[in-house]
Structures are given as C-alpha cells and as structure tokens.
Image (tube, rainbow, N blue to C red; front, side, top):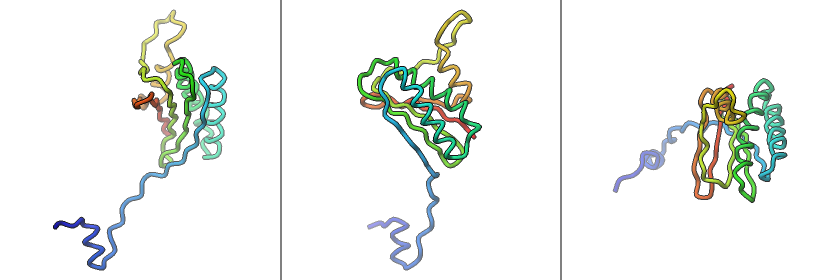
Length: 149
C-alpha cells in the first residue's frame, strides 16, 4: 500500500517539509438591497477598508469600480440582496466583488460618442487593466475587479 510523502516523513520521525502559506486574505462584506442608494453604501465600505489597510491612494479608483459593479447588479431586478466584498489579497491587490442573483452575464460594450450609457464595464476594464471577470453560480453570479497596488 502506498503512503503519501508527508505521512512517510512523519513515520520516520522527521519534520515534514514546510508548505508555503497561502496569500494573506483580509476582507469585509455587506449585504445590500437592489436599490440605487446601495451604491453609496458600497462605496463607504470600500473607502473604510482601504483607509484601514493604509491604501488611501486606491480609494478613488476602487470607489468608481465599486459604483459601476453595484449599479449593474442593482439593474438586474433581483428581489433579495446582493453581497459586496472588498478583499486585500497578499498586500498586492484589492478585489471588489459583487454577488447578485442574476445569471445574466455582463457584456463589455464599446459605446458610441453619442451613447448616454454602456460605458461602465469599459471604465472598469480600463481602471483594472483588464483584470476583471465573472463566476457563474447556481443562483446568480459574482463579478469581480482587481485593482493592483
């Protein structure tokens, strides 16, 4: 019967090799209703966390990204709550995530000059250098955007 290397090392009385620690994750989240005023609440969450983490220079970008993601979620017409999460990943990246109850995927549209809308994801794409994405879940999706320090 084969044994795993860590088990064999333990049986031989040696200390198992040290595994690298996963990146440090620090996060905060809030449940918000699908209403326009939720955008301000989400922005306040992001501002507060970035100040707590000593990252004030990222606040303007992070608040703008948050506004776009939460506005898009609020337009889905879902009836319960969306979850907004701000995460600091290994002191290198701030991730803004919005989980909503719609499985409709966001679409990056190139707006014409006279278009009054359809610029939100383009702005997110530009501010994050294309580091955003979507994870489809059984009861909705999570849209995330990463802001590098």
